[in-house]
Amino acid sequence: MAGCQVPGRIATSHPRGSLSETAPPHASSGPSTPATDDPATAGLAPPMQGLDAGEDDVAAALERVRSFIDPRLDEALVFSADAAPRLVEAMRYVVLAPGKRLRPALALWAAEACGGSWEAAAPAAVAVELIHAYSLVHDDLPAMDDDDLRRGRPTCHRAFDEATAILCGDALQAKAFEVLADGLPAERSGRACALLARAAGAEALVGGQTDDLAAERGWAADHGTMSPVERIAWMERINRRKTGALFQAALAIGGLAAGADAGQRAVLDRFGRGFGEAFQIADDLLDAEGTEGSMGKRVGKDAGRGKLTLPTVVGIAAARERGTALAEEAAAAVGSLGPDACHLASLARWIVRRNH
Ligand code: GRG
Image (tube, rainbow, N blue to C red; front, side, top):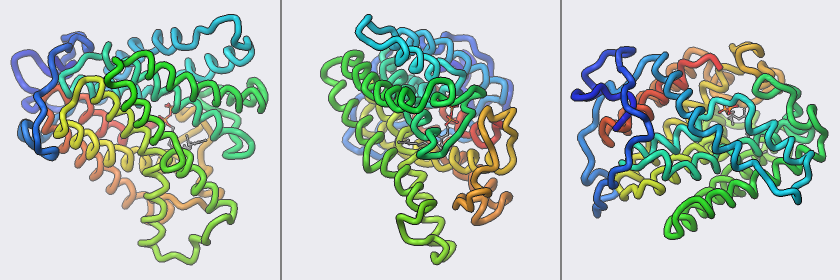
């Protein structure tokens, strides 16, 4: 049962902002849709245009995700006396800080969209947030982005010290795989760990981050000599790995936890691609136009460093248009999963409207 579906009617019939939230969002525990041979469309409902909730509904839905996942993140960060207290303190400091919990939301809502329960997908949601938190800690280090503020608080190396921040990221990464390996049924945990490892590794998160730094530090070809089309392609390739891959992994592992069939997995993948690109464009626009107060982190970094982003290449208005179009495409794609995908569709539209 989808949280943003009005009982007895489907979400498509409701104007933006009118969708009530009556069912517990994690109540769904029904069986997954039977497997089909056609990975693209078989067994899926026809696309539902306009599947959306209003601004307040998305915020409220994300709050429910936080209420569900934060106690589980807390629980995952309780260690025996063998763990160094300073390390544990740092891990808890960064993970339990007020992030948006987008990746847990994607994992839980992907499971819900595929007929599974939040409970079954909880290890996936926890694991992706731990990987995300580790990547933020390392990205903020002086050797990388050198930031002092994250989620409205001093960054980990500022609150503790650099060595602790490095070790904190290392331990969060290890914990993510432990949670996934222990938390999912044996027949799914191996595949889930492989999906997460690929998203976090040299071909995705770490590879994208390396190429991003390479441009800034002159380790790679000077993008100043590229045509605009080449620049955009080069930048999108970085973003797909650095940012998009973890979103896609959240969706894929959430779907896996729910026993998603090939058709559902293909839809989640398509949604994740568009979602990731739209998110990155919105993030770049917020860097250009947002405030440190609303963002809880330093802004205006990209222009200061001459960094390649869609707004710096094509301008603010064109970038905003592209972000909105990508979000709409993603929302339309996931509509084929049926009304239980309404939160995914709403989130895609929200990420390009948000101010933080
Ligand atoms: C260090 C291996 C390694 C990778 C770093 C996280 C990252 C890759 C780079 C951070 C730079 C950046 C701003 C990337 C854009 C995408 C991104 C990860 C934004 C932050 O995600 P949100 O908005 O953050 O979901 P919260 O704090 O809400 O969870």
